[in-house]
Length: 326
Image (tube, rainbow, N blue to C red):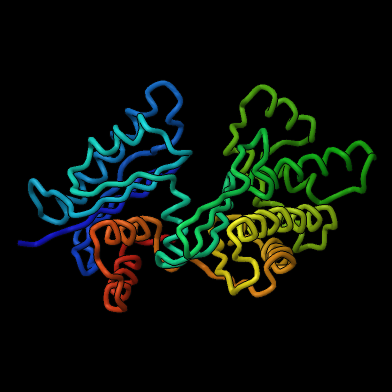
């Protein structure tokens, strides 16, 4: 009788479920809706629906009926929450089930289940690590009001602040002003004030403005380059803090770089690497090996007691290519 595992990656915009056999071969893939904002009214129910939809699609794609998975891992946005865990577990039939924040499967997608540190920098940011003793630590991830230094939102906010300073004459003129106005299709920077405080621009909308900062930096704008360098330092500082807390900073700790901020700016990456090396001189930098949902599959295989041989990992590589974006 065939046996299977399930990996789920709950995201800000969509949820992905992947079913693999016990050797890591992809058998079914499904997509569902967003699984974020679980503390908003109806949020837990929405996350459960997203998981049920994605898993249902994956089950149908795998041509399975009444399947009970040997292991299932669900990586979901936000901190751990017992109510959310119960709701998600209730949507999945599995002998062994674990739900954890999506930073856990993000790390697995970089390290293939081994020790290391992952820095996730998109609209928000968080840094997470695990050492060989099974200890875990994280840094940043305090949200856009309390932290998230180096995130897309943080970069956009500091770019807007630099443009405002230049507009007032409190700082040097910057290309960021015209870049921001062009992105928003406005003719005066003060229009941005009304867009923000009337809440016509959402937090993701503001974070999206970060895309103009590397453009301005590439054209030699000093203010843009300063924002990107500081973003890299903040992200590197978080990685160094996690490596230090887990006592991995003296060795060849693997540091994964995940998310649009690190992918989208060479300036951020250079500054990030310099800062990490100040704290962990022998750090080894890595891109994700697997898509996040396949990181979840890998953790589900471990839950089921499967040894991650080179053959299994090669099958997961192939599965990741089928799933798509890492």
